[in-house]
Image 1 (cartoon, rainbow, N blue to C red):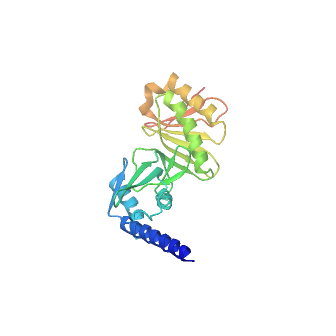
Image 2 (spheres, rainbow, N blue to C red):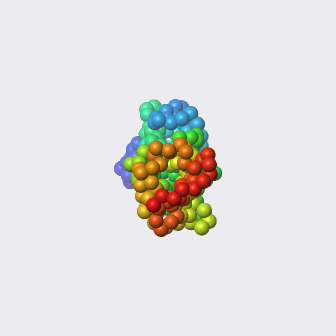
Image 3 (spheres, one colour):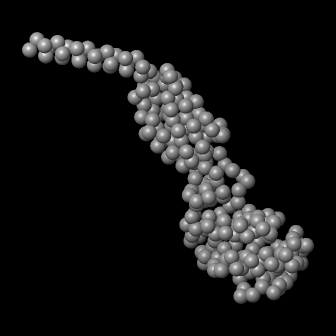
Length: 230
């Protein structure tokens, strides 16, 4: 009986010592370092999320939960949080690379996922659809862009109307109507027209209509007249 009591006292002492040591080590978080190529607004957004968890000590802080809350900002692609002795955190964030603007202040990554950025991006094309999902819009955009790159052209805006017809605006302001089917084939006809005639008069082209079984129709900026190419 005496022996059991002694063992219990020893265990209690060890537990008390461990608890005391934990209390000494589990200090309040006093420094947070955010790493990554981030803007001031993005760093501020991360610090705002972290500040909600600073009522816990550096050891008792749930790093996995904090990582998940930072990911909920939508624009971080990867997040790594680690403790720094004695009372600091280092948060490494790699953000999504956005491909296009989407909706009311949103953006799309290459997989067609909607991302909300703390700061806007002005150097990406704009996508807008009446019927298609963001993912479908990105698939169409990437297919068109891959063909246009070879022709030295680029998209600044791609729209889908309520009939499912696609209209793209190229750098320089030329609009191209592709309709709602066989988009790749129709764009190939547009590119063929550019190689044959339009490249030499690129700045004069207002609109190209490829919604025909064969060839395209071209409207010129100054005269407004249309010209059929077959």
